Image (cartoon, rainbow, N blue to C red; front, top):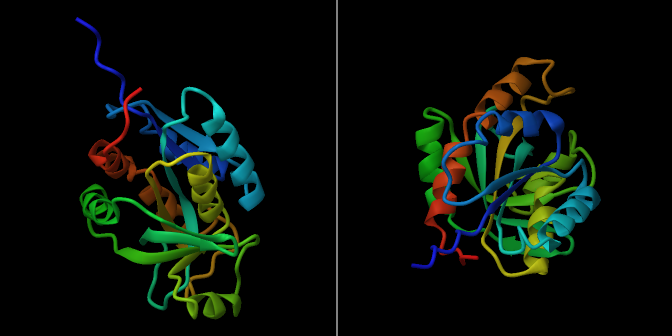
Length: 213
């Protein structure tokens, strides 16, 4: 009897070492397929290079891709530790729709009970957004901003058709600006939330109609 083909893998992309550390604490679990946590480096150019290179290899050519890490909230009332599930990511080059948004919201509620989960467009920036820039981005309809998610997902779908998603943890918000991650309560809170989200990513991955190798 021939062996069953292996399920397609999952590539989880983040920018910072502290994000990768939080995710790798739970990386070696039981997944629907192999999971790789990739640290891309900061900024859209670094994310594009890293993701394109990883997906060009034979082991990850059909991988689902999920961008994650920290973000800046744009909406009043957001707090550090809130979660953002993107309905789409966007930057000046275009937008990418995300798969399985409703399921991610449901599973994040189970994985991190009591945390607020926001849904809406996640916009990209090539720099850390401060002060008055928030209101301008909010006026476009975006609910949060980061530097890598849009570039990650755009690069992923350009390499080949695949399910993509973006889940971010708010590390600062209009009323809670953070100067340096990990030095204040907001950064610590966001880190703890990020450390807990992998079970939701697992269920998202399992639910996808992924091709088998």
